Length: 378
Ligand SMILES: *Cc1c(COP(=O)(O)O)cnc(C)c1O
Image (cartoon, rainbow, N blue to C red; front, side):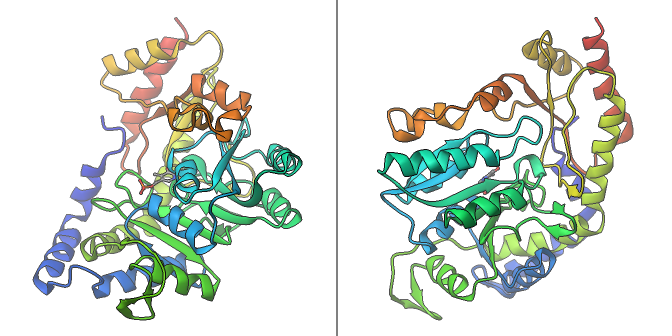
C-alpha cells in the first residue's frame, strides 16, 4: 500500500499525460509555453480570483507574495506553529521575523484568539511592526478566515493564505486560495494537485500586485521586457512541461478526485468511529481537499508501537509534524523561538497521518482500520 499512490493516478491518466509531455518536447517551448497561460487561466477561474501567477514552487510563491508587499526587516509576520517549515521560512527569507501562534486543537489551524494576543504582545513590545498573517490551510482544511479577517482588518495586517495543502477545499462554496489578499499553493507531487516535479502558483484579485508578482518571478522585469530589470526579483517560473502535466491532472482533480478523497475520509471516519482515536474535524460548511488524513491518538496509545504495527502489515503512516516551528533549530536564539504553543506541542506528540489519496480502495481502507482497531483493543 502506498501513502499517496501517484503511480495509480498516472496509470489512469497515462495517455493524456504522455501526449502532453511529448507535445512540449516537440514544440521546444520549454519555458513560458502556451500551456502555462492556459493553466493559469483555468486555475484562476476555478478558484474564483482575477489573477493566477504560476511560479517554481510553493515556497517561492510565499516569498514572492511577501516581496510584493515589501515586507522585510523590522516586520512581524504571524504564522501558525503547526505547519510545514516554508510557512515560517519565507518571512525569515525576506528578513522579517516570524511570530509563531498556537493552533486550534480540533482543526489544527491558526487559533484566531491567540493570533490577536500575539499581535498585541508585539505591539506592546514595540520592537517589530505587525505586518502580515500567513494562514495555512493545514492538511486540506481551510483556516477560519471569517475570524482571521476581522483581526487583520482591526490591526491593518495583510492576509496571506498558504494554500499549499488546501487547494480544492472550500468554505460555504468559496474556494481555497481565494481567502487571502494573496494566496499561494504548491504543485509538489504529493500535494492535493501535484505535478511531476516542483511547481507553485500565486492568486490575487489585486491588479497592481499581480503585475508586481509577474515582474518578480522573472528577475524584476519591466512589463514584457526581461532584459530591462527595474527591481530585484527571482527566477521562479513553472516549467511548460509541468503546466502541460497539470492540465489533464487538473481535469481529473475537478471531475472526481476531490470527491473521491472525501469518500475515503468518510469511510475512515466510519470505520474508526469506535477506535478512541480522534478523527479529523471538519466544521460545518467546510470542505477539505485532504492533503492528509490525520488522527489524534489519546493517552495510552503508543504512537511508535502503532506505526510499527501498521508497518508490519504493509501500511505506511507518517507524523506530520513532529516538531513545532518555534522549536526548529533554524529559529534558535531568535525572537521567533519565544512562542508558547502548548496545543502544537501536544499535537506534535499525538498526531498520525494515514494513507490518503483519491485512488485508495475500500479494501485498503478496511485493512488499515482493522489493523488499528485490533491494536487499540489489545
Ligand atoms: C508543501 C508546503 C509548502 C511549500 O511548497 P513547495 O512547493 O514544496 O515549496 C508551503 N507551505 C505548506 C503548508 C506546505 O505544505
